[in-house]
Every structure is written in structure tokens, then in C-alpha cells.
Length: 260
Image (tube, rainbow, N blue to C red; front, side, top):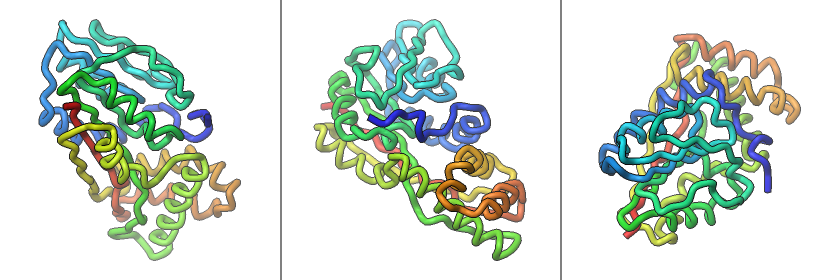
């Protein structure tokens, strides 16, 4: 089984803070609709910076619990109802906590796993009757420039972002997986399955372009090794600070299903 350390981004504030600014509103909206009750048992997989763990901790209250699991959990804040576990979820080893759970959440995790289909079935089976599985993934889509300082900047953005996606795919991520989760949840026996797709514009200097910058910065060496032009990459990185650069965000897919 491929080790996550071979291809995921590092859990650092420059990566996770922009991610949370972009994704947390979508996750909060999903949780508001699901409306898990205080006192529940919640599981947050790939907890990252811990923002969703904190959301779940607030919902769980004094009588509930949240288990947070990540290969690198150093940014997850402890709490009286939070247990933090360090585990590489790509290994296929049993989870350090057992169900049943009222809600299981994983964001930007399952597309990295070679056993992603079996893992979703496993998570579905860990739910209590009436419990929810909530997954969120980025999916690969064609890079889109809304406005740019020049055609050169626009062309570099498209080439570099496509290059980033190619490098990620070569390192065992599955760029279309988010579009397959809905059917996988149905196959796992979940009901009330629903998918939502999210895009928005990102402007140079804002949180989204800071995320693009960090993504590419972390994979710069791998991209150059794969044959991508360093000058293109450097122009891309500089443009992510230019307010004249406006691009389409990553495509985020949020999928939820309930155990009957």
C-alpha cells in the first residue's frame, strides 16, 4: 500500500488555513442540515488543522465524544471531549477507535487511498442506524482563468495547474473520485445520498490563490523532475499575489449519506 507521505501535502498553516477558509462554510452548512445531536459519537478522519474536529466538539457537548485521526495530527487542538489519534489511513490497518458512530466525516482524504471503495463501505458499516457519513473531495477539472495581467500569465496558470494535477495523479491520487462517491455510498447501502458541487472565483492575494501557491510550492521539485518548466512555475507563483489575476477555484464535491 502506498504511503501517504509519498504524495500528500504537508499539514502546515500555509496549506491548511486557506483550505479551512474555503471549505469550512460548506462543511458547516452540511452539518447544520444533518443536525447531529449533542451527546453523539463523532469521527473526524484526516483531521488536518482540526477545524471540523472543533465544530463536532461543539456539537457533541459534554456528554458526547469526537475522535480525530490523521497521519500528522499536531495541529488538532485537544479538548475534554476530543481524543486525538495518529495513524496513516492508507495502510488498511483497523481504526484506533471502534463504532458505531452518529457521524463520520472525512475531507480531502479518500481520493488518496488505493482502497477507497472498500474504505467507504467500512465507514458506512461503522454508523449507527440513522447515522451520517459526510465526505468532501477536490476533483480534477480544467483550469479556468477569469482575468489575468497578460496572456502569458493565463497560459502559465493553465500549464502549471494541469502539471500539478498530473503529478498528483502519478502519485496515486484519483482526480475523478469525488464524482464516484455518490454511487459508492449507494452501493454501501446508505440512503438519502446527496452530492453538492462548489466553485468560486479566487483573486490573487486571497486565501484561494494562497492555497494554489502552497500546493505548487510543495510540489515544485516533483514537477520540475517530471519535466515542467521552472520559469512557468515561478511566474505562476508570483501571479498568485497579483490582484489582477482572477481564476476559478478547485472544484469541491460534498457527499453525504445516511444509514437506514
